[in-house]
Structure formats: structure tokens, C-alpha cells
Image (cartoon, rainbow, N blue to C red; front, side):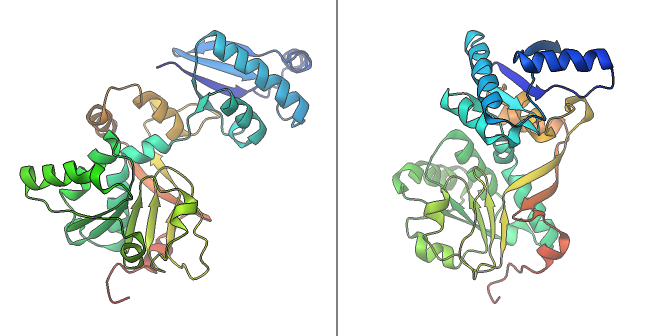
Amino acid sequence: MVIWYVQENLYTCDIVKRWIIKIKKFFNIIDIKKVDEKTICELPFLPDRKIKRINNVAKKLNKILYKNDVQNIVLSEELYKHEELKNILYSNNINILNGRKLFNYLAYEVLQYILDKQDKDIRETEVSILVNDNNETNLRNISLIAKDAKRINIITNNINKFKVIEKNLLNESGIMIRITNNCKQALVNSRIILNMDFPEELLNKYNIFRKAIIINLNNEIKILPKKFQGINIKGIKCHIPEQYKMDMFENEVVYESLIIKLKDFSSIRNQITKDNVRIESLIGNNGKISNEEFSKIHLTKNV
């Protein structure tokens, strides 16, 4: 898998270099260079936010990516804020990494982080999982959690897709899981909800327990009902080893770009363990979720 890293021109105090950057901006010149075996593209339009310039640079970048057969990129933190740039890239089938795959591979650790904040044991915890796609990552995460959790509820519109994992867990480990398509009834009583792939419009059709903790692995989801007073987890911040970090880029996305080149779920999980990657904080609707916010949520049935 080929992945390129795209950033804006670095600011410089050197007068000559500043003039060179101005010339490159005028002619929409994109620099391509190799740094530590990574290919980096420097775009010339920041801090200029004119739509016309963004469009011109984005189209030129598309041509370069197509010519070099590059379909996956990482945008710098600043460039990721440019919706116009991203939309043009998306329209040309360019995949922009955003850290969601790393979030998925750390699903078990996210759950454990929450339970540590709650001073709860996973062996005494019931987890509801919203899932429709039975891809390898989803199935492996379900197995990983099911082996430790007190009880797993699989909430899905595709019951037949998950009959195999239900049978395998029972035969291989003696673990029973509950599978249901009654989302309405299941969610109203669920305290911890791991949302693997339900979209926002579907999730918001159901009554969710007002003080639930919802972990959204694949999308940032807004919980619309006003009565919802729980925690809506949208992202993660991780401890990443220094050797993987890149200036101007989100650490989690850079690390994701490296591990997704590995072959399978087990290889990626092993690498994460080897690198001692761990959850430092979780991100909610208003940024980092504090210990005080977690302390207001109780995972007991009588609250």
C-alpha cells in the first residue's frame, strides 16, 4: 500500500526562501520530497484560503497522485480543516486517513480505559455492540471483548451474518452471546454501547438510555435527543513512540498509516502491543473527556 503525506509550505524567516514560496504559490507549484522513506507533498496555498486557489492546487495534486498510482494520503492537521480540499480529493477516489482504523484496532483498550475510570471490572460488565458488517476487524473485536466481558449483546439488522461467530464462541470457548435485531428495546437499557458501524441517522431513530456511554468507532456521531446526558465518544488520543511522530501531522493518523500496511488484525494488534501504544484520553462532543465527566456516569442498573 502506497501512502503519501501532504502538508502546507513550512513558514520560514529566510527572506530568499520566503520569496521562493511566494513564487510557488503564484504558479501553484507542488513540491515532492522524500524524508525518512516517506513521500511528502508540500502545497503552496496556505495560509491563503481562497476557494479558487484551493481548487487549482487540489486538481493539480490529484493529477500527481493519479500519475504515481497513489490512492491513500495523510493530510497535515491544518490541511485536514479544508473541506473544499478534502471534497475534491474524495471526488477523485482518494482515501484520506483519519485515525479511525487505529480507533477500531484499539476498541478493547478504549473499553478498558472507560472501565478503569469507572473502577469496574470487564468481567462484571455487559456490553452492547451495534454492528451490521461482519468484516474481520468487527468479528475479531467482538471475540476479543466477548472472552472477557460478562455478557455481549450483538444488535444488528443482519442476524444471519453473526450466527457463525455465535456458534464458534460457544463451541470453542463456551461463551454465549445474545444477537437481536430489536434495536429499540436493546438500546433503551444499554449502559455501554460500542457502535461499530451504525450511521448517525439510524442511531438517532432509537431511544438510547439517557446516561449511556457510546463509543463510535467509525464516525463522529451527534446524539440528538435533548434528554441524553451520557458520554458520546468520538475519538482518541494515544501515546505514540517518538520515532513515529511527524511535525504538522496528527500522531494517531501517522501511526495508523504505518500499521495498516501489515497483513491482518493479529499482526496489527501485535505491533500495537510491541510499540506500547496506549490510550491517553478520549474525545467527546466538547473535546477531551475529563475524569469528572466519567464520575457522573454510573454503569449500574438502578441509575
